[in-house]
Amino acid sequence: MRLALATRYSNSLSQKVTNAPLVTFRLLFGALMVVSILRFWINGWIYDLYIAPKLYFPFIEGLKPVPGDGMYVVFGAMLLAATMIMVGAYYRVATTAFFLLFTYVELLDKTNYLNHYYFVSLLSFLLIFIPAHKDFSWDVRFGRTKPTAEAPRIFIQVLRLQMAILYVFAGIAKINSDWLLRAQPMKMWLAANVYQPVIGELFRYKLTAYIFSWFGMVYDTTIPFWLSWKKSRVPAYVTVVIFHLMTWWLFPIGMFPFIMIAITTVFFSPESHQRVLQQFKNWTRWQAPLPKSNAAVSPAIKWLFIGYFAVQFLLPMRYLAYPGDLFWTEEGYRFSWRVMLMEKAGQASFYVKDKGQEKAFLVPNYEYLTQQQEKMMATQPDMIVQYAHMLEEIYKAKGLTDPVITAEVYVTLNGRPNRQFIDPKVDLTEVRNDWRHKTWISRYD
Image (cartoon, rainbow, N blue to C red; front, side, top):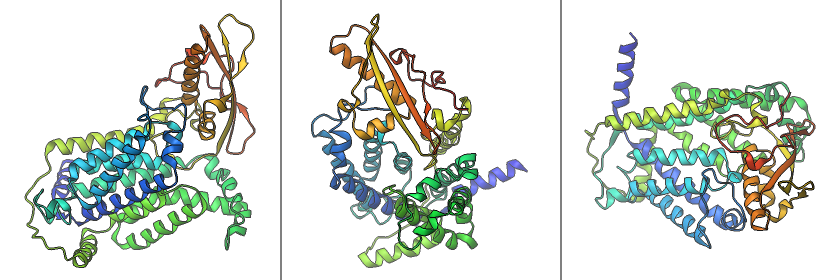
């Protein structure tokens, strides 16, 4: 019975359907990336985040920004790649280049980590293997690829599954006592928006925070299923639009709401996408014969997707391997769809002395870090260690033989009083960042 069901499902994934959902996804994704990169450029964030800082907190040791004005070249190349994805020009080259460039920038500094940057990296990686350029593209127009009207259903399902993983894991992450029983940090966030027109007064009531918190959890955990059911798809998508516009209005989360509104359309039927795409073709007077496709999905691609999604399911659950409170230690926190779950702030004072000396002196953090870097570093243990190691090299260059670096760090989590975050006696130069539990983080009882 199970084998028969598995065979039937496998056959359904190989079934040919119109490739219109892939084409519209490519158009929307490319356009959103063009806007996002231009927004970065216009707001001066390339300089502020990747040129101006003296130090960086890379995910991969030794990874550094391109020196001088080289980061403008990186973003320029990324903009070109996004444009090429949108129009379907040299598609495989464009998707590969965009994935590599965007992921490189994302990994340069943990300070700038956002879930939706990670999401963009994943989508651009998947697009490398998805034939979204077989219709209504530059490559078709100029004969660089053979046009087809169809594609195996698996490629659409891959995009839907990636969306569902984001939503469901984000919802599961909200099933915690702070979010559901204390309505924190929603109470604090809404209190900062009481002067919003029309509904601002509602944010003064505790009940509003509880409604928002519970609705957010239910929405995230169930919306992929409502979108997958034909009868509920339209009202579910209306909910998606309202939900993300509300979050954009209340919270500074950039392009993420618009990205989600646009690409969640992948849940609509292939026929719906075909009708919309045909309107674009009529408007642009697109003329191209579209034969049916006989191409099958190679076993290598199938195994690639299986391995990819195995990682996607396991990575958000790695926190279970660590003791302690996840929000406090943040061990297994990143790359796990924990979207807007906590309000955490800290103050970190670092002290340096040469080994054997009695007196230590305070490090002026402002000389080495931007305000945003200092803010993020003070609450994230791996960044604290990275900073200590960078200080070790700095003070060796200043004449210290064997620097000893300790830190007094106090952190508040979701409105609770400040608590000591790490052991102030630990020499952080002796600590290494790895996958093991950080025993020098103070317990959170």
